[in-house]
Length: 339
Image 1 (cartoon, rainbow, N blue to C red):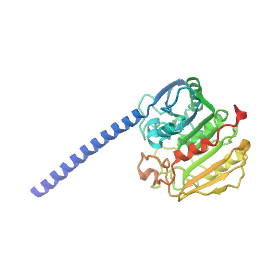
Image 2: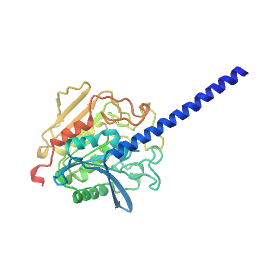
Image 3: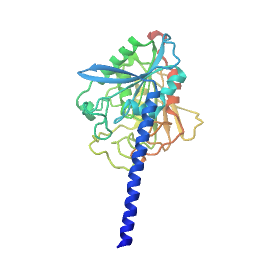
Image 4: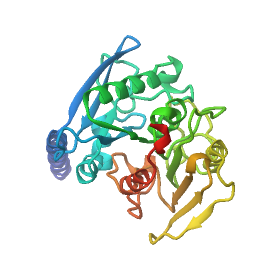
């Protein structure tokens, strides 16, 4: 019995040490995250839309002279994410400083606005046109929020209105599709990453070039369509099981919207496992670029993954989406005739 008691006591001590160690590591991570956000030199914008106070974070490149008009990039976080999360995930702040553009991180609403965001129980989510989540069920006016946010930015910062772009991840990618349709006159190009085009009849006032990036092993945005699942194959508890169209059908719909060549042209890529097809010939010189990454799951390519592999799948470093997207945007300002 003494031996058993000693063994139990030993493992009890180990458990206490483990709990303390995990607590210390979590505290250190929280401090590191706070330091990272503080160093990002962010400004907070608050607007009241539809009776709700809405928030966005904005970063202006550190070397800007305060006068020269700058491009603007909108970055939409995914379901359950926050602006702070997506800043850590994507590297857009460093890219903003390196290339000289304003980057804006809008925040979606959450089911209980009086409580802090919490992944899994108080998820921020965009009204992306799918009629899912609280945002779709309550008809949250997210497009109106983004329009008002652009008004505020243009009124308070020097903006190159020919170079206003939108990108996003997951539910934020789906929101990118939606603003690309409903705010097309104000944008130059869009780049959704691992999201769906939910609008039944895609119609836009102006043709916008599209770069779409996704992993071919993404369980939440399946290449062949269907309901989102975890990488283990299990569905998400409490999440509407609404099936997505196959990814290639979303691409085909945007190709038809722009009037691009239906037959895409593969282009050479030096990155192993990365395939890119270009559909050119769209109205006003627009095009659709479709990039897939072999074996990649539901993670911002080249970014920092904040969720476990059993949920989102495996990550690769074959492509840096932030770099690829900005390269694409630099080539696709609005035509001079659209000023």
